[in-house]
Length: 288
Image (cartoon, rainbow, N blue to C red; front, side, top):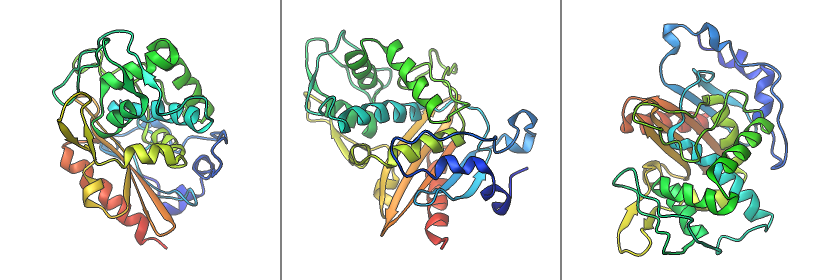
């Protein structure tokens, strides 16, 4: 059974989303509900509406259901890189020399050639705009030495942020084979990383980019987040889809001084995720 707004807002776990300091490490005092006792009614779409400014959770459904995040995984990778950029450990203008040629797994992605060099900023925009899986692998290998080392840091960071139900196995959320997703998380945990990402002007710059030109070509690709074009104030964050995960979307928008975050996981269609996310954002802006 879903929690009422009054009951939900008094739970101590909401404190995780209240932090406004980038380097804070939120602690989980208790889960929002016991996912082991999930009923058939709870096996639907995960929905979460968060007021970023205060951490208030206005609506939640199935937020503790463990499920694959698909390309929402890339938010953690972008978060780690943004931390390095903002600490000036690396710069977005550095050249990335791929360790090997990386071939795309779908028609919307592009080949990362071992014979070429790519600006880090371009690869990050490719991840944010067209959800490039090849770019995620190239960046992880270049900055961490291997995908495995990058995943290790992703999991350490998730633990430090209080994402207790999250386990990353990939840097891009792509299944090891069709229908077999290995990454696991919850809507609640995705809400935590979404809040952290919204603290970063660097990430919002990547995720608000509406078009991306494939390197070495004149091919222009539109951002997979339709709400950038449909919802006033939207500037992120990330779409995702696999057969197991369904259609996922973490969206955020800012109007005046108020920012709202919506989390949608497991929608049946692409259009449904945008409709749900739009409704959640509207709820957020209408409140107060």
